[in-house]
Image (cartoon, one colour):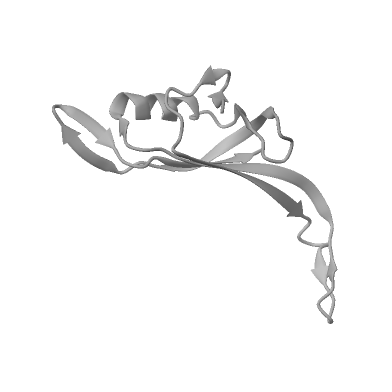
Length: 119
């Protein structure tokens, strides 16, 4: 697997990586009839990447978060549908990282979770 943000490979890879293929439908023209039949107006197909890391040292956590701090970033990732390494523009949603433990003067952060959604 290869993961990079703005052409910089991640310093640590996530323990869990999920590539979702999402259909976006027009909210006004996508409807259901009285008998339940769907009239659908798909306007786009987008990707959403869900990533979770094992415990990270503070420096590793900081490096990963700094890579995704811009409003939009280019992410290079393995795409489940195309079967290729793709590069697309994404934005990062909430980035959660609870403190786990300090051991021998090193702060470890438990379970960074990030969801990135294609622009």
